[in-house]
Image (cartoon, rainbow, N blue to C red):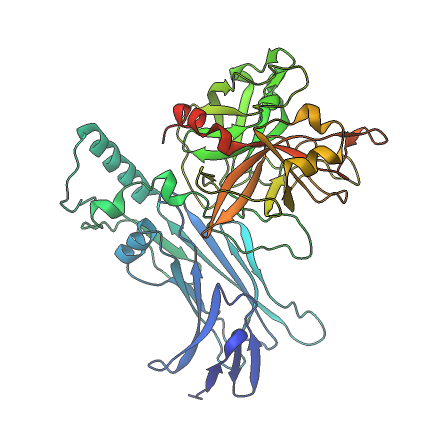
Length: 467
């Protein structure tokens, strides 16, 4: 056996007997040399799925040589069945190991696809010469474990008792791979983590912290899926079963989203509850079969009573939609924290707005959400900028914008303005209104945008929203 000596340097560069291989995504994938087995392996570390979700992982590799045999390598999860489930419950990353078919040259990453989402793309070498493509696949099944956990938690709630004694729940996990015989369908085990690890995470524990934070689109403001998992799409159900996209909204608990009141009330007409459809985990508005999204119907809508108390004022432009059922948090669906009274902001600070608003070039609702960073300005600066601001602002609004033709517009209404504090995102404002450009008859983004100041409505929000 020929021994290949390898070294790893910073920036993810691997040197193996003259080879120079750079991993395209060192935050997910690394080459590591095993001294015991005297060979090089690939290691992946990926965000944990929710229990009850089956997650497929595809790793595509390429080589500039022909394989001497039909052995293509293997892809497998690291750890025992018990330890994998423990990691998922404790929200620790899931690790995978790749055994390569060759050590010299080592295969390069072509792409990594996790839960139908491309999380890493490497160099594509399809020029002259030989290129061997290797496709490895692994599916992690946790449906049975999720059902067992849900049943146990439901039983605990019914008993209405709390015990410090470790909770023993029978669970199973299955794991398959196109390159191995591993199949754990019939394997069960006991002695899962204690009750404080098994319990469902609360909104305050998970809010404002996305699981998938690595932007996959460079050189632009288009958001990647899962980057802001609290963004919700608000639809109106029409006759004959069709739906129409209306506004953005923000998930703030397992059974509530916050949006702008004007998205639900037009003049004196309030949208009927049975016409409201909320889709969570939504990314592509044109794709109604997106994996991981959840469609939820409204149980009740709560408009702030002060909204439209004056003809032109956008004061109190805020509404709560209570959902018919509790949603399940996942890497695509998580709540946003709400800005507290003690977390102040100052003019000059910046917030981030996300939504599917109209493209300023084509004037149409975009299929994918975009983000933009906007600077908050003082009330005095806002009022001086445009005559209409004295009519559409109030003591419960604030203004922000870049005054350069960019910013939220139609379709972004109801969406969040977010600010980051202590590593977590918080809901500070709701996209509400802007002056009209008389030439384009659209939003005048050469000035500022008016946002509902969520912090001014905290007592009202707390009265209506429960975990």
